[in-house]
Amino acid sequence: MNLFWPRFLIIGFIVIVIGVLLMGDPGAPAHHGGGQIKHPEGAAAVKHGGAIEHGGAAKHEEGHDAVHREPLLELPEFLPNLLTIPSFKNHGIPVWDWIHVYMWENVFFSIVVAGLLICLVKWMQPSEDVTDVPNRKQTVLELIVEKLNGMVEGVIGPEGKKYTPFVGSLFMYIWCMNMIGLVPGMKAATSYIGITLGLAVATFLYVQYVGLRENGIEGYLHHLAGSPQDGVGWAMSPLMFVLHVLGELIKPVSLALRLFGNVMGEDALIGVFAVLGIVLLSTLTGGPTTLESMMGLKAMTTADMASLQWFGIPLQLPIMMLALLTGTIQALVFALLATIYIFLMLPHDHHDDEHGHEAHH
Amino acid sequence: MLPLILAELDQSALLALALPLGVALAAIGSAMGLGRAVSTALESMGRQPEAAGAIQTAMIIGCAFIEALTIYALLTVFVLMGKMG
Image (cartoon, rainbow over all chains, first blue to last red; front, side):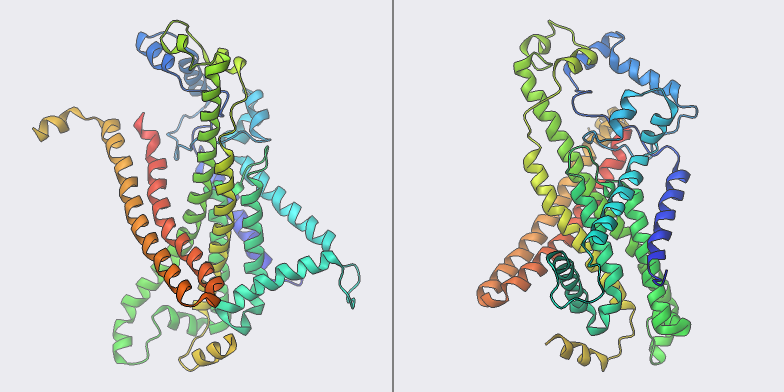
């Protein structure tokens, strides 16, 4: 491989996998709209001490885990996807439970997106080296690369061209992962904190590597100490060193949390509105919100509700349109912030600012 | 009066009281910040219509940063939601 920078993405990916394995039980399994609808019957039956599906299911889960730990993060309900549907149908078989409880579906979908992107670009690349008139697929590729290059060079200047591969692939990867979450049957892998943390760690490592390469080890430490020039600077440098190191460490955390919070919030909203659509339609089809069951005249278990109705009014469609918007914006913000962090690491003397400004015009 | 009220509340009641309040406060702050950002952007777009594209891009990016702080408050809710029982 004659490229050096992809190993940072590989390191980030390894960090994800190690983090997932170390975290153990990351949270309660996400329930799905259509299978678990909360209804007033449940609360009433629990008070009476009756054995209902809800209580039975809870006991079943506690008995299933060999070591029952407190969930680290109680994730809200998402829509089902290609891996969670089999894992719910095969509840009890250890492999399928392991996939869902330990959230391996996110790693699976991140690999699927990476594979799709690689195959797509390989298909669109021209077969010969140089052609006079590029065909349409090559033009699309060149358009994408030109736009991304324009964004990076707009921040860094003309020497930003060597950072465009990393930032550009970061943007395309995050954007495709966010968009593929809206395809029915797929899940946005960025809605899991492990994936976004891995991407943020990859960015952090790449930015530090760029700082070391461009400044040298002495220049890197000099920059971290606040670039002291005179006596006052040197006197303040221990404090500035601590502040800069803390700042460098908090930057990937904020990157990861911003992307994770936005994408998971949208997915949770989609799940809530899908369940709302099902519950609203159940007034017509005899589900839990009919007058009889709400007045307590007809007891309904979860199995009754699941067998009655699995479709609903698609109220989650406007939210999916919003998810298109926020997915694109968050990918752009992540890539732009990575560019800005790279720019802050590069040597910027006072007389270099004029060169940078001249290059913009 | 207040100690009597506080003695009655258990953990999940306190969380149920505090978590939505926290998100609401974060939403107020971000709404004020976003309003200022968007209004300045619109005003500058009116002053110089030929720069409207660049101003719009910068406004969207700035709004994403401001929104992220509200999302952090929402994340705290998600983390503590399980403890409400």
